[in-house]
Amino acid sequence: MLSIRKRGGVGKMCEVIAGRWASRAVLGLLFLAAETAPLWAEKVVLKAGTSIPVEIVENLNSKLNSPGETVHLRVIEDVRVGQALVIPKGFPATGKVGETKASQSVGRGGEIEFYVTHVKAIDGQQVATDKDNLGSEGRQRTGATVGYTLLLGIPGLLAKGRQGFVLRGTQYDVAVKQDTEVDLDRPVSETPLKAADYSVTGKFTDKQVVKFAKGKSKEELEAKIMLSPEVQGQVQGLPGCVEVLQVGDFLLPKPLPALKGGIDAGKNLLKLSFDWWEVIRYGTPNATPVTVQIKLASGKTARAVLNLESEWKLK
Image 1 (tube, rainbow, N blue to C red):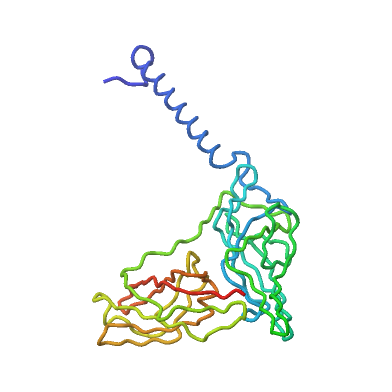
Image 2: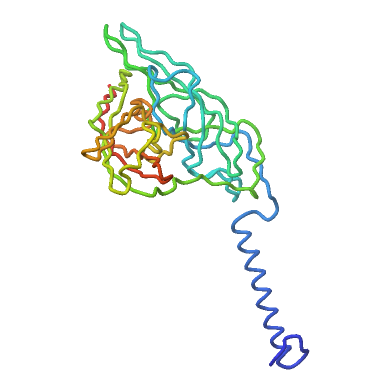
């Protein structure tokens, strides 16, 4: 048996080879570290004025929203300091509804504005942003100082004007308020939606006509879910055991419980209703998938994706 501890001969050759491989391994690790994070710093400073591109993930309306309500947005491009990733694409941003004015008679349109307050960084902290008023048109993606525009409802001649509104997907640039230190050694990630134990099917009862320009709302959004054999007899505690978790690709910050619920045992059919506006506010024209979860008596969950078909009136 050869030993690399032995000096000279084959043993020395093995020692040299082993040393070379060890050196290559160390160099490889150093190269990998250089590619993934800066070696010279565990923290970086996100400078005041840095532009962060975001999009709003809900709809706002001057009649249906109130000042002070939370507004949800998300980052649409990675934000970096040098090569260091400090705010990943998809991370959330939050804001508040500012002033709202519902439309008036004699053709005066409504107005709504909002501002972004914070954006989540890779270390989990909330980075403060300038509280500039934003509106419907979005910004020119130039990185200039934040404006600016409110949406004014379209005025009509001697008729009641349209409500001011902002549609989901409108993009803005917001600016970091002050120099902020971001810790690269403590990255966090957004938690994805966990899989359910069972899958069921269902649908919303009717196609929805959303008269968004007029700010008209309904009280309830009705749905039906077929109960598969695995979950029959396990649905207890209605309506609170049924919740909306996700609308489109947006995971709600807080699950939305059903308003009403009942079971047609003969048809194994679960009949539900939800707050109309609290679902529609995250929807999009035409069709939006809505993820609904049922908490079962066994402690397991069943989940259905309901297709919300809608026609939006924006004029």
